[in-house]
Each structure stands twice: as C-alpha cells, then as structure tokens.
Image 1 (tube, helix red, strand yellow):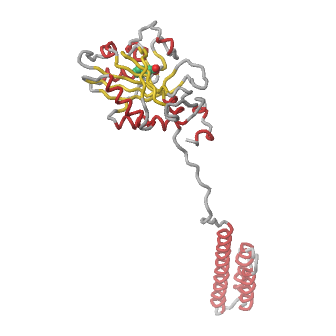
Image 2: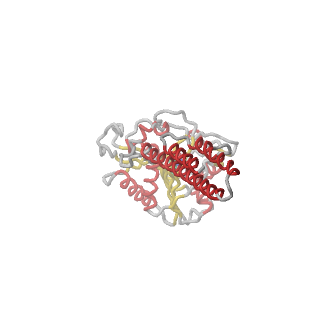
Length: 337
Ligand code: PHE
C-alpha cells in the first residue's frame, strides 16, 4: 500500500507540474470522492491494526503534498497571468500627451470685462438690473411717457402691457436712484433687446454698459474728463474725444460721443469708414425730471449718464466687420481673440 501511495503522489505531482495542467481535473482525479487517494483510504479496513495508523498518516501526508502542489501551481499561474497583463497593457507615460484644448472668454465678455475694469479703477461699482423689466423703469421714469416718439426707435418685446424686455440698460439708472442716495457712481453692464432684424450691424439682443454719476456739483466737464480717461485707457493715449449735440429724453444736454479712429489716428481708413471718428456712446447730464422721478432733488444734486454698446466697441476694437460672427460661436472665429 505504501508503494501505491507513493505512486499516486508521484503521478499527481508530475501531472500538476506538466504544462497546461488542468488543476481542477487533477484534484478530482486524485482527491475527489471517487478519486485514487480516496480509493486507497477505503481499502484500509483490510490492514492490520499496527499498519493502519502508519498508512493513514502516510495517506494524509500524500494528500497534503498534492494539495500544496495544486495551490502553488494555481498561485504561479495567477502570477504569470498578471505579469503577462502588466507587460501587454503597459502605458508609456513618457510619451508626449495630446494637449488638452483650453477654452477662453468670448470676445464680448473680454471687452465687457475690460470696460468694467477701467471704471472700477475710477471708483465705480457695478449695479445689475433685470432683463425682463417694467415699462416704468425702461421708459416712463426716464422721461419717455406713453406715446413718446422715442419709443419707436426702441421698440421691444412686450410680455404684458407693462412688462417688456428692456431696450436699454438706462432702466438701471432709475432703479439705482430709487434705492441709493447720492453720491452715486455705478456702471451697469447687461443684455438689452430690440425689435431689430438681424444684419451685419443689428441684432435683436445685444449688450450695453450704462454709467451713472450723481452728486453735488457734477458738471459736463466731469463727464468729459471721465470719458476721456476711459477712451485713452481703452484705445490708447493719443485718443481724442468729440461730442456731437444729440437728443435723449432722459439727459439734457445730450451728446453722441466719438473717439478718434484708433487704427488711422483720424486720417480716415476702412475701420472708421474714412471719417476719422468712431461713435462709441450716448451721454448727457441727467434730466432734472428723471432725478425728481427717483426722489432726488435736482436743485441740490446733478449727474451725468452714458450708455455704450459692447458689440460696437468689440467690433471696432478687434476689426470684426459682421456682428453675426459674435453670436454664431464658430470656434474658428472665436479662437482668434
Ligand atoms: N440708453 C441710450 C441708448 O440706448 C444711451 C444713453 C445712456 C444715452 C445714457 C444717454 C445717457 O441709446
């Protein structure tokens, strides 16, 4: 029996160590319920009482050895598999990577932030107002009563009789003056809406930056000096300003303000359409009626206001000839700025 056990052990071990050994099959063949080793143990009844413990112990040793060999082979196979995967799936981290594409701010946002920075540098703070606005703040408080002809040039989208999409950021002037008492020094950037057909210079949605200063003794000279500082910071130190008389219902006197062309310096070129000047904003002294409408005494206080179109400035600044490019969001266009 000893020899039988010895043979079982040798056969099992060499089967285990063979290449491509089916370990589960081997386990069943030798150690399973109907396996070879089990068969030997079943025949132990025929042994003498002296032989039985010796053969029993030997059988146990053979079982342990086979189990150990099966475990070691399984472990070795697992390690070999892992090793193979590590080699096959190796990533060369020293290869140059595909550069991630960086996003950037839209040119309109860049220009708006540049404008904001300049005014913040002059002590202004930023006020915001709603895009869905009462007729009162967009028109009536600004000295534009119902049926006033100025409403024609700023036709907009009415949500109800009294609620509309604001046609100008000047609506924020009235809101701020109702809430704050002078000294007031704010700018208000934001979207405005008009019933305009889309073309190279018009869009039913565009952006403005409004400015408002109210205090004792504010004059048109303050407006001019402040705008000059603004224009020189944005367009360069040689920039000149030109005030042309104009009419806005909420400022008196009113002006349209041009800057000397920052491309040709005033000689005339494509950007300024040969005029030497580029219109950038509307401005004027806050009308006494508007101050009164907002509870500020025009005998004590005076102020100036201005409003500029961000698209217009961005287009001139970057030499963009069609406003539609700014909204189509073609990355080939946008990544130039
Ligand atoms: N709100 C005017 C416009 O949209 C611009 C403006 C603002 C004019 C403030 C004077 C003062 O045309």
